[in-house]
Length: 311
Ligand SMILES: Nc1nc2c(c(=O)[nH]1)N[C@H]1C(S)=C(S)[C@@H](COP(=O)(O)O)O[C@H]1N2
Ligand SMILES: [Mo]
View 1 (cartoon, rainbow, N blue to C red):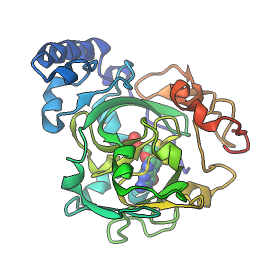
View 2 (cartoon, helix red, strand yellow):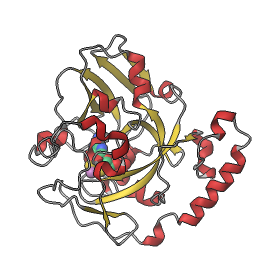
View 3 (cartoon, helix red, strand yellow):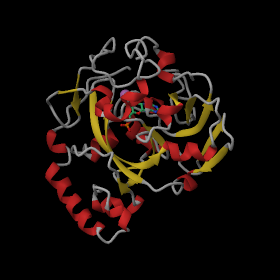
């Protein structure tokens, strides 16, 4: 990716852990009044923001301190709106978020087009505090709001011949780059078992509020054990297919970006070591974990594969 050095973000800019923990306690107490099922979840919603989307906390959340909202919404990759980290926050506001539909088609028994407001009510929204790791060497911890993509895919009933899911994103040359920095529309793909994995989140919000344009509003994917670029933003179509689909980054530089792109400290990118990372808001580097720390949940998906060849 065409990257300039990141402007350093001060440690004081991240939500201090004590403040977040305090909010958790408030929510836990408030949560006692919730339905019995909800009270079983380890509560972790910042109270003021939880009101808008009303998500349930998830046991898949990390207890690491979330990255400050300003960084989550101001330091982005969304190349359709420019290649500088500040470009998406400056330019993505031009994108009209309504009406918006998500078409799900291909090798499915019940192809269907979901209106975005219908999608928001399709399944209970969860808050998933996930580690996100970009191939460029930075990482964040983000409280996302969404539900497992599997809940959507089950509704369209994938056929036995279905092996992959392809994600196609919004492209409007009137407001986005025309220059073919990448192949537009930006496309991504997952193997169907990866797409159906409970960690794979169809994401509609962050920090308890609907997604901002720069983060991929109104609907994006979040795949926490893969490098950031697998988490396609502003999706308009999902195609269930038999053959491995082409993906934007793999088309742009196949020797740098493989189809799988699992976070793997043992396999270096030609330009960036993947052994360690800098959490936005910190100065020190921390070691990068296999599958971004989600190995226990996802390593079995890759049993018998050589992840140096299938990087
Ligand atoms: N449509 C689209 N989706 C995209 C990208 C993009 O350029 N276009 N960039 C990817 C990359 S490289 C990363 S690291 C994440 C960043 O998501 P965030 O800005 O919400 O943290 O979005 C991914 N999804
Ligand atoms: Mo990225």
